[in-house]
Length: 200
DNA sequence: CCGAGGATTATCT
DNA sequence: GATAATCCTCGGA
Image 1 (cartoon, chains in turn orange, green, red):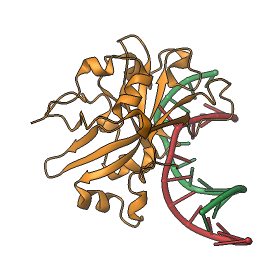
Image 2 (image 1 turned 90 degrees about the vertical axis):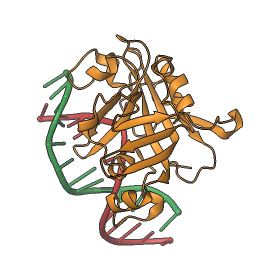
Image 3 (image 1 turned 180 degrees about the vertical axis):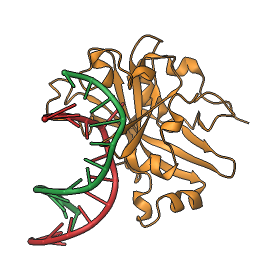
Image 4 (image 1 turned 120 degrees about the vertical axis):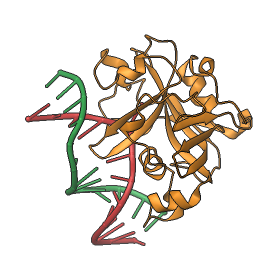
């Protein structure tokens, strides 16, 4: 039995956590199914100074998990339709998170296919809203402890990813009113050439 | 393949 | 009342 990534891992800078999550294994456990998938794309949202982050304007009811203890899930609804999954980062009292943007399915493919019925297999988990549908992740998992081996949502360490396999670039999908440098700064991380990332 | 436009609703101003 | 860390459909090439 492999231990989940420890809370000390998440307590680091969100950029470091986002990069470090590449290659790690997200595990979704229910009574009947275990789904495992490799994290292949992430984004870092960090600090009051990050004008693209929910934490920018101080504490609100929605973003409260970002301020709490690291190593927990921050799940919220976007565009009134899709749940997005983040891992809370940095010290308690510091608003930061790493968004999980894409996964490479490993186990539980039948359950994923059922959750994504009607879609082509290549679009099962290659986007932050798609992967939560595929793994049945909802607000029920907000604040879930990602370090609890018996929890519904955990992250295990994966094989190490060499630096040359990682690409970086601007974050995706922010409103046009996010000012520079936050709009264009390279805080998206993905595995170069992995077919499951949301964009090449 | 690609771009444009609509869906849909909690959250914040 | 405006906005949003997105996805899907449809039309055209």
